[in-house]
Amino acid sequence: MKKIFLYILAGSLCFTACKKDGDDTPTYVEPEDIATQNSYDDQSIQKFLDNNYLDSQGNIKAFSSTDTSDDNEKKLSELNPITLPSGVVYIVRAGAQPEDSSPPVTGTTIGEKDILTILSKTTTYLAANTDGNVAFIAGTSMSGYSPLEGSGSPFKDPMFYYVKKNVLTSDTSKDKNYYEIEGFQEAIRKFKAFNQDNGAPYNLQGVIIVPSRAAFARDAHYNYSGYSFRNRSFVFNFQVYKSETRPADQE
Image (cartoon, rainbow, N blue to C red):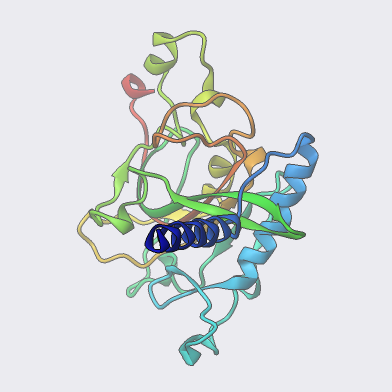
């Protein structure tokens, strides 16, 4: 009988501890007012810019509180981030553009209909208020569009940049906004593309951060990665390997 009581006591203590641990995990609660979500996005972007830096190949890295090796790195917020009227923030990484190559090459201007070949790490975040602390939580890789974490091979012609007419005509109930991320389109054209093969070593050109209002906000969208992008902001850490004029039969 005594043993049974001890087992019950141990079990109840374990349940309490597990429950406490779970309670400490930030949970996203959607604000009723979308203006509040927009404010959370903007505040979270600023914190993200202060809490991260770029390594020698342009990868976004979080500052460590225990490792002093990154103490002399510049915050993203110190790398001349530019904020567009839409709320999108982009950073052109110095020394990593086509004209900065050795030897220098002329970069290709990215057109509205161009076929892009791009290497990136793409992460989506929810901006939330957790006990008065507003910051990004629930960072999730955009599956299939984050090859820096997987194959290392650039992907071509992402539909979130340009959706073809044949896709739109196959389902006339959906328009471009169902597929395309307007904020990404807007910011990627601030960069120039290289003209290099897929196997070339990467040197990431910069960062694009798209707040949810310049992505899909709370609207229905294409199922890109198997989870909802509702209220999610996007962080693109990338290099455009190539930008090609789109043939008329692929528009």
